Image (cartoon, rainbow, N blue to C red):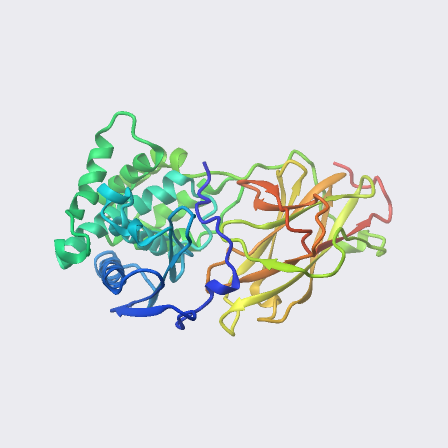
Length: 435
């Protein structure tokens, strides 16, 4: 099961930065700022203190690089299910049906203190491993369960039982609860994953995780077989420790997912082998009516080539970058897939190709990629609340636009057609260089 637990839509309203939206109030603790609406200041302060203590422990005891300020937003959404999630970089968001969702777990059924420790654990990992699509739910959620449980123990030692306005023994929700879960013979995949991270802690120590994650974050990985690169990086980061190598042999099947390779035999040819008479395929009407940035997802369009032996040479995306004035020093992905989502090619381009706050057509020229009669084109920006690209869509839905990623699968996008276009060209001498 893929680790796509951040399937929320990052809308412009979530990019509030340090300014609280109208009608909301702000409380602060060291390294944390909470803007809140619809809850009492007592709960807002408890959330700030919980997150501050968890952040401090992750930095001081585990060596993780967390933001100078974690920004937390708490809002009421009457009639909606409670949600707590992070963008993986610097923001945590909690959506509540009512303030009663913050009552102790015995009443609300929600582990709020643990939840903020859990999301801090996610942030610690994702900042070190920004490209983590290879992680299964057992790896990503298991890590947050493991570290979140341990961070909660530290929060309790620092803040005590009186931390939460609706006082209860929240220490029982930390490693005590994890230990009980691991003792069950039918433990779920998240608990099993947490157990694997606990085993690694015994081999590398608490601060060894930051070293391992940094190595994984910098490692070149084959999307179709990431385990090999991860194994090499792990060995280098831990001094070729044979016990760590043995741990990885057991952990890899639980932690690593691969992108399905397409069976289509795509040829690589130089641009000079093409006719130079590209044909543009456009399924949108050119009139932007809305925009989205998918956290944990991508924007995809299903195209049909005019026939066989056509090569993709250019992709055009109508979009705008949000976040800091300077573009992040990272690449986004253009995935070329067959009609079933099997990966044909993964092309990468720098974030700086998109201007901040100015929506326009951005042309991305590719080395020619041969495509089958029907193919998917997916762009993915791995966004957060503080950086990403808004891709625009028109108003009329043709059924060709999708959301998702190659490793997760795709589902229809119902609000219109993405303003994403492609250009295809043919060989000067068709039939030449067939495999």
